[in-house]
Amino acid sequence: MAPEHYRAILERIDSDDDGPGSWAVEWTRAGERLEGAGDLLGASRHYAMARFPFVNGEARRAAHERGLAVFDRWRANVPGIERLDLELPDGTVRCWTSGLSTTDRKPLLIVSGGIVTVKEQWAAVLARGARLGLAGVVIELPGVGENTLPYSAQSSTLLSAILDELADRADVGTTYALAMSFSGHLALRAAAADQRIKGVVTTCAPISAFFTDTAWQAQVPRITTDTLAHLVGTKPSQVYDEIRDWALPAETLENLTIPVAYAASLRDEIIPQDEVRLLREHVGKLDVVAYDDVHGSPAHTGEVGLWTILSILKMAGGRQVPRALLTASLTAQKARRRIGL
Image (cartoon, rainbow, N blue to C red; front, top):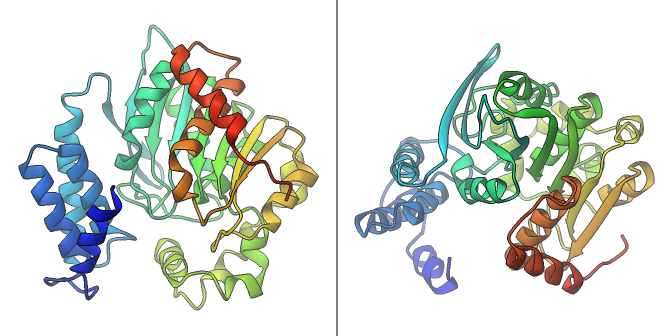
């Protein structure tokens, strides 16, 4: 979004309830204007902002439902993006997919966002996956969006369950995970136990210190703490005690014989810098890039996007992509600032 666009919306917001002038209502109204103008994908993104960071009232619930509906209308005119609902023992995982086939099983790319990100925000990645010669599935973390699974220390088994379900429609023995933020933590734990996952690309993922460093936890933004508490099903004052044993031990990281690509933010207000040091000490095939930015490197979105594609391409053994895309990715790689952490 252009700064002048979102700033105009933010200027109209003066509360966080369900009435006029609230976060959810003003973002919803902006989405309605775009929907009326025929910009369905843009409207979907605004409804996703309206339900941010999680559904906790009627206005956010309505925004989430509208976002799902308008995205479904948008993707109906985009060839290759299909809906898939997976019924697992602990709940339902609703996904968007591309390239699944029982007769032409391609290597699989699993895409997942963080604790505040719904799957509809990653729609464009499915088209990129197809250009890489990969089948794709976009999911949400347990407890986020339409994923009804509980978020717990056992959540990493979700990826293996998805691979089991898709084994007849994709070459799940060659799976790559593009897992942002907290999904990166889940993907790394899953990859250490499931050899079908051949590579993990992640940005600003918690590894160990986030879960154990009480001094760091005291300064984590309230919105992150509140969202984690909502997903885990506990009080904000108790959530860090609940997730303390989620830290990835050194032996788990050392079990990762696959390539891992990690993008860090030097001014990350959520993830401590010590996580990269731990990865460097215990992960054998590690590529780290760092940006002078806050969590998720929002000022470097384009560059991070190209870096993730190039990282997946390398892991997949140089599968064919349009020359212009590869050239742009290589240029971004050379231009990025490498900093030893």
